Image (cartoon, rainbow, N blue to C red; front, side, top):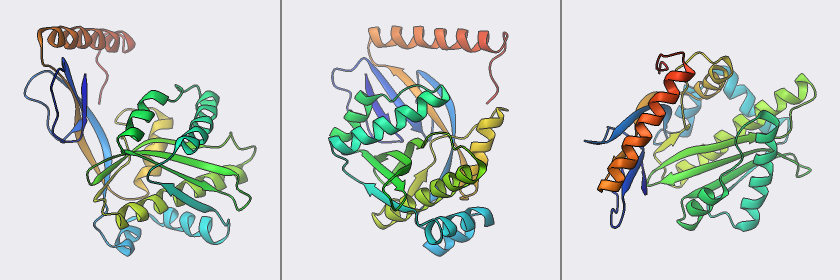
Amino acid sequence: MVETWFDEPAHLARADVLRCIQRSEPTEDGTATPFYTLLLDMRERPETLLAKMNKETRYEIRRAEDKDGIECRIWNCPDRDCRGRFASFYNEFAAGRGLALLNVDKLQKFADQGELILSAAHLPTGEALVWHSYYRGGRRVRLLHSATCSTPSDNRERSMLGRANRLSHWHDMSQFRSAGIETYDFGGWHEGRDSKKIAINQFKQGFGGEITLNYNCLRGLTRLGNAAVWIHSKFVARTSALACGGFRPSR
């Protein structure tokens, strides 16, 4: 299987299946699944980007930086030690919320190709509060993971984590913009009715941006690949129908 992101060209030698992540248009054949995300145009001036955020997001960013003393750092080429610290932090976060653990092999492949970026926000004491991971493809970065430290004990700590997360995103955006990145991709937008995911939408939308439709596609390149894609499409369609009582989920 060969995997491509966004609309980058694929090198198909000796591949059975082409998997395209977040294409702007579906492939001519194979399967295509709609994927909504939120995109920000990093070509805007910093003051314009801030002006497009809502009032709460701008306030939280300023307070995190000026009053909380939260510091941010980004690694464009994270080494093994950095990746290990991120993996430990994320897996503890995921275990506490019933999420899947980190796919370390996939992360390693991104790092080997120079496509992985990690960032963190921490207190002056060095205690990490937030970690982010990104995939970089050309002039676009896509958020892969966002994790915060253990569930806070009270509303005060919870509020500080929210501020730290907003400041971390803004710091990342600023660094990406300086590096020539044109598009910041929040890595998904929930189109359903899950209240927790809707709350995440609201957090993202506080930064502005545009909801955009992309497509995740699978295309068979050989007889074996076509058979694999056909089986995959039948399995996904069946399990989706069962999960929704016989109806396909709304997007």
